[in-house]
Amino acid sequence: MENINRKFLADLIYTKLKSEESVIQKQYNDAKDKIGYFFIDDLLPEHIARYIYEKFPLPEEVTLKRSLREYKYIAAQMDKYDSILEEIVYAFQDERIVKLVGNICKINNPLPDSNLYAGGISMMGHENYLNPHLDNSHDKDRNLWRVLNLLFYVTPDWKEENGGNLEIWPDGIKSAQTTIHSKFNRLAVMATHQGSWHSVSPVKAQGIRCCVSNYYFAEEPLLTSDEFHVTSFRGRPEQKVVDVILQADNSLRMGLRKVFKKGVVENPHVYKKPPQNNPK
Image 1 (cartoon, rainbow, N blue to C red):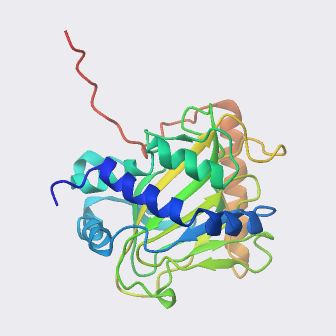
Image 2 (image 1 turned 30 degrees about the horizontal axis):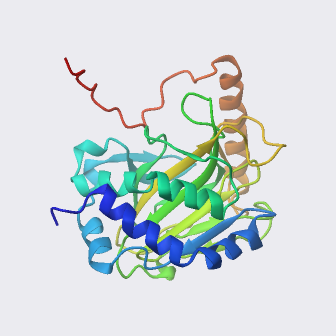
């Protein structure tokens, strides 16, 4: 599939979103008072979505993140992998798509993140998980507010009972969550703000759930009550001890960020692109 580039993919995505704009806008509006979200199925032609999945790297070729907070595989250095992966990541940053998604979610002037700060691709296998958390409120330079999370799932035949599904906690982690099946060829979009608790359910199957991730940012936060915060994790309702530990961890990391505005060490989860040669 030599002719599949980000422009071609963006054309397909834009057309699909536009064709269902009123439906997904209603879905978002119905949820926006708590955690706004929408999802859309069959985003790309099936053979293209399958091709993207087939080009995902092996787990040993990406970065493993394992702690009480999370257990998953991630990658943002896209030039290390098949070019189709970089093309699909940046297709979601096409100006038309960014503007359309912003209009759907009633967000003024959303901005894509070419640095892929916490974006790129992710993979989750058996027993992998992502505990309830709030995403870091800002971009890597702490200049812009994170406002939207875009997740495109590409594992064929992935069943809901396999786990690895997006969970949204609209009334907080002490109440019931809303589960969004990480279904093949589904795009899920959710608002990120001070109350956007979300997680990924533990994977129960032996396969690998693959996802293409993007974040959009803006000059203003979604909620006037939003304040700066680091990525903040909690335990699940049944994880009482884990919850205490993670709350202490959140407080420690937040305290460090009050002293070191951009962190003690540079977050490695960014796309470090080679410098461009200046034309003579």
